[in-house]
Length: 497
Ligand SMILES: Cc1cc2nc3c(=O)[nH]c(=O)nc-3n(C[C@H](O)[C@H](O)[C@H](O)COP(=O)(O)OP(=O)(O)OC[C@H]3O[C@@H](n4cnc5c(N)ncnc54)[C@H](O)[C@@H]3O)c2cc1C
Image 1 (cartoon, rainbow, N blue to C red):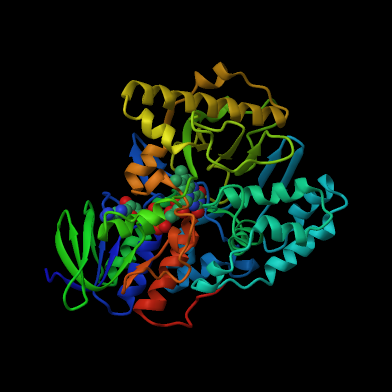
Image 2: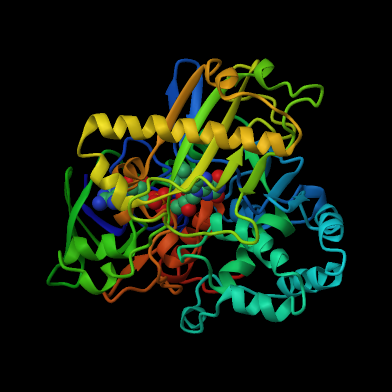
């Protein structure tokens, strides 16, 4: 094998593999290096008995049913030459923002009728203000590669206060919650352009899940990369990077030394710079602090037939117990998890998905809780304590789901549910750190983004979370945009939404 390439990509996360496909489609010699045994990064899967367990996936965002228009997901698939139908997407019937004061239900876009009705019910004075926010976001143009947007960072909280001036402050909190938890690397706020991206991704486009979970997408992406002549090395950890005399990059890995004119990394900014210089200190101070635990439990469907109400009907529930506001921040130093809010997902509650990842008489519940990375890092040093803490996360996650169901008028006891669990698993910040390689297990990456993908080093670019686009769809967009801009140099091609 010739060890010289046009482009080497570090990490086969969703952004790395899409950057790889686009680069290979333009005829470049591409090498994709991934330390894990499968591609997908934070969104991969594993098999246990007859079940396929998604590591992350609750939902794809940015979905619009084909008869309602073309969402961002549509555009991405076109750029990758993957057929929309091949993903076999089922859309969510509805999702819910559930606060102690009341709930707001939303469905998929582009019209926001269901959402608007919920706003009217809970905030009768504020419907017009909400609609004016929707119009602002509809007209907001976001460019994928835009350094100016990083320089002019505006607080979404402050901008929303202006747009929704005079509205009940709780409306602002309820609208921010899903956008923060699905995509902010800052505590309690996010940049306004990021808010606009998230608002559109969640409410004006919407949620869907591929039949069979994230494996379907991973198989399609991998096949496209190989079809275009890309070279993939799994279980290959990049150890260091140096600049050669002729200006090329030399990439030292556990499977040998490779060189290329350009390197694109989805491993993170701090993490990539540390491959060049061990002391990437200035950036370390702005390490992202937001990380989560994720508890997954599988129950017989019969356990949750809700006292004449049927099974839970929403797909994703953004649940908060703190009256008046939502706290999106790492829990205090001596606390493992924040049990006053959560993202609860019922991944089987998607329409049209004929083939599930588990037997049809079972039902999966996933619960994400904000967690403190430093606490978990200390815990993992004593195995018995670490395992006990995982049990605690499972217990608290189940109790939280029961509190949510109580809000829906259904009372079930902890033991009634606990004893029926068929399978469970708990991912901790330490799992995320170990498998994704991110400092502090920061799920949405570093606090400061490089929106043009440039780094202090010539011909080394960032894609994915630290370029500023998160989530499965955001990461895929980022990989495409960076390859279009710097590898193919096709600046016109799909760089705005
Ligand atoms: C529990 C959880 C649930 C989530 N749920 C959803 C969801 O429902 N919907 C959604 O849209 N998003 C979800 N996300 C977020 C989404 O997974 C991420 O935003 C997105 O996958 C980030 O992609 P990326 O390409 O930026 O990077 P990553 O996924 O972080 O990929 C980076 C890759 O680089 C590799 N790597 C790192 N260092 C090296 C090295 N030195 N050598 C070789 N390889 C290296 C890593 O192994 C990894 O594969 C979830 C995340 C988590 C953790």
